[in-house]
Amino acid sequence: MALPQRPPELVFRSLCELYLHFQSLFLAGKSTGREFQSACGCRIMIFDHHFFHIVKLTRPGVARLFMSEEKTKILAQIVGFGDYAYDDNRARHLASAMDTLTNPDCVYRPEKLRTADRVFIREYDSSPYPYTAVFVGNRDGGFKVPVTAFPLKRPDLKKWTRGLKLFPKTHQPPHNGG
Image (cartoon, one colour):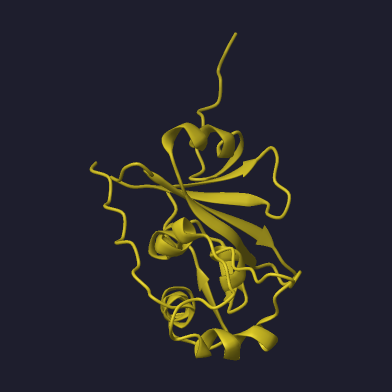
């Protein structure tokens, strides 16, 4: 089976444009949140503030960003990025992050995670980053939320696939040993 092509990298010239890409991809055009079911069976809830985590958005001197305070500023930033900083690699690959969240090839519970409890992984016919990883955590109500996402190079994959494989479930036939 041929590997899928990675969705095209996003092009954006301003923070507003980047956020509107996120809103279109992750929130399906809704303004604050969306729930859907991933192909692995997880109920996923995405809120507008997950934008901060997915693109690693920061502002100097601000320890924690809140969408209630930042959204107007983000949408007003139609030229450039102002004093905001973000991870360009994560931002350009938002489309593959959402594709991975929706249709993961596998889901693992790695041995060492701090803010998430599982990682969704999808492989693409792409270089130098053939994989995308999306970290997902539990929240009250039984749904999962995205914590962060980023493209991975092949050598980095091992770090995130050590642990319990949650999807797809592989069943071994019972051992009839004697």
